[in-house]
Image 1 (cartoon, rainbow, N blue to C red):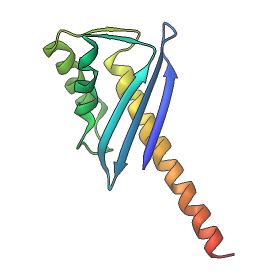
Image 2 (image 1 turned 90 degrees about the vertical axis):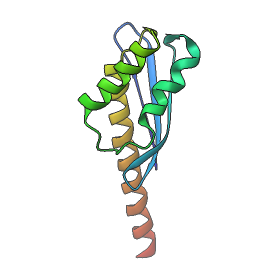
Image 3 (image 1 turned 30 degrees about the vertical axis):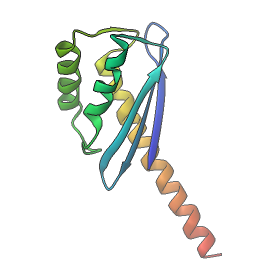
Length: 113
């Protein structure tokens, strides 16, 4: 399943999170938008935090992990916060799950026609 969610966060920056997941586990993540992260090459560190995690992750636990990476690499985030990344990731999971359920319902409807 693929779930994507985006939101304009306070300050007007767009943040988009795309997660690929199956069987309750996240296997890829992308965080994009018009925000700034320095050093730029460290965004993949934030994305990698999600890989292998359950889609039912606790927001507080994920927030701690993201904040730890930000601190470890002395990252500067402009127009984005770890809190918003976690929120939008949860929204992406919900969107992907809902889309999958809709697709399954359509498939069953066609089979029964």
